[in-house]
Image (cartoon, rainbow, N blue to C red; front, side, top):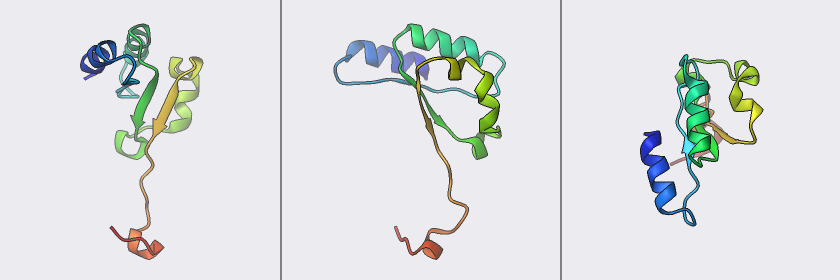
Length: 88
């Protein structure tokens, strides 16, 4: 996945900004972030703590937090949309 994003960003640098897809608990996540940043990707996304089974506060000591990267975090609603007065 990241190789494809890198390829497309390098092909269309004025049109695209690439984000890194990661599995936060993977033992080589730091290596993948480093590799992708060196290849020109600008952020991490989309992280989904509930779906990927990790605590967002556990990322504070990782390399992801040591770099000037944008991070997209998906947070699901625990309340049905109709109870909030929302419909699709």
